[in-house]
Length: 107
Image (tube, rainbow, N blue to C red; front, top):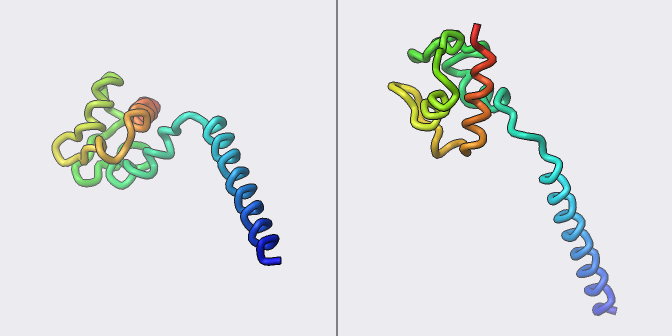
């Protein structure tokens, strides 16, 4: 009797783990591209503000930025003056997404 219970428990466990792995693979395949706006809200809003004009802690007014995309990526990656470098915090893909989103803040 114990062997049957153990067998059913193991079978249920394997089925549950298998379906979880399948869900994970399906979710990662359908994951949308990185959302620069949400990353900006998570990491940048404290100093730059929602619209890029806040200037907290000496932050630059992003609506007046004239930097090309690659230079914005470099600034976000390495930091500048008091700005935190995000190299160790965000992936290159996320940094690029934020840099592209910042372009939408320009006036």
